Length: 462
Image (tube, rainbow, N blue to C red; front, side, top):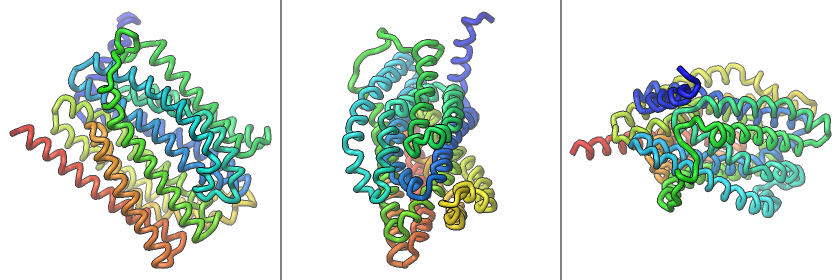
């Protein structure tokens, strides 16, 4: 076989996989995705670990910037999900031209949104942080935030490009790019923070620089090497508001979901400040980084489900939607059970990672207690993530958003107020609110998705 035939063979194999058995496709896509996300969280965790050595105020500053940063990350992931959903539905419908046009529109949208959003955030950053309750940590939070949000375009572009590749069944190359990013970030973090003496801004510069490396890889694969299913040329582009609307129909609600979760993070931070001060925020910030790592397997499985459900919906193979929903949930819960047990057993050891300096050593017991409570939350998360992902794959972004609002705003916020203030549980009330409110919301989402797919199959038969 000649070298010219290899790319075509690889593309055909990927397309054959995502249009075939949903279980096999989910396994194939989710493993590289999980590895990629673990790498992302590893270098985010590295930021927290190295910054923790600067003391609780520096770590709390990261905690106040994190909700806004997650909004940006959510926008990138949302646009990536919108691109993946539309492209995969076109693949399922055997519409190659539509897939190409969707990919090109996704890149154009990314560039335009990134430029506008960067300017807006940098202008209003101090005011936003004050509203979020940064207070005594404001200066540190601004130092970190100005650098990170100045490189916002790298973060968003990398996410959207990854979504385009995943839509055609290519999850390995985004993983390779993220591996390079994570390794670079982990290496230069302590150099920028301590050796150069840049403090929290050093952690931010490490993040921006490493994100730029990921973008270089993506640009090479998509625009220069050109061995993908989708192609990028002027002949493939036909400006269409319908395509834009289809991308944003998933992308904006998915981004809004991250915004809602970030708003919840702000609310919880305020409750924590009121009940335990900056130290309570620091404990939550450190512990939540670990929780996010534990949530990566179900998130990775859910991300794979977007592509698989999109293909199934585009080809009207609704039975495959049921298989995607059930298998993804079962796989996610199984992994979460193992993760929860390990977290509970090694909570003290994990907490000590954030308490290696004399300034932060006192936080270790509280971080360990937080992690042990969160183990219960792990078990229900896969249900909610899978349900939202399947709805996104079908292009039903608003439905996914409604489920997120129900879980985050209605359930978790309600129980946070109830437990922290009414029942007088203080900062620990916030922890239990996440377990009870989040768990209830995830169960409702899964039941809703199952009911919706049954309706699709019934109507299609009729």
